[in-house]
Length: 97
Image (cartoon, rainbow, N blue to C red; front, side, top):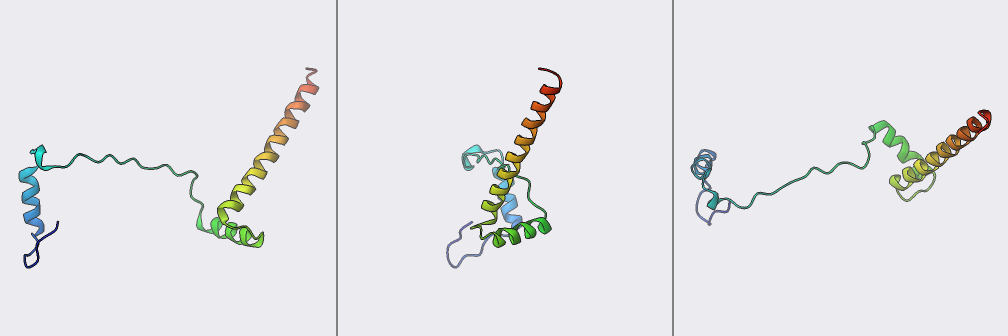
């Protein structure tokens, strides 16, 4: 709340009284603001794990920890997909399909 120079700002009690008096008068209130909480892309890492990741990102001379983690996750997903595909192929061959 801006106050002109030389005047004292209203106390909390005075502000509360003003708000309570104007609570039902929609003409004194601004349009409501809608706020949506952004969902994090991933769950935050525990500090010890983040420190270990930062160490290896520096060791591999990666520009940022995020870039290193993105590359490591992509490599791991590629390995998992290859293993899964191989397992499906082995099961299909075993079942004679």
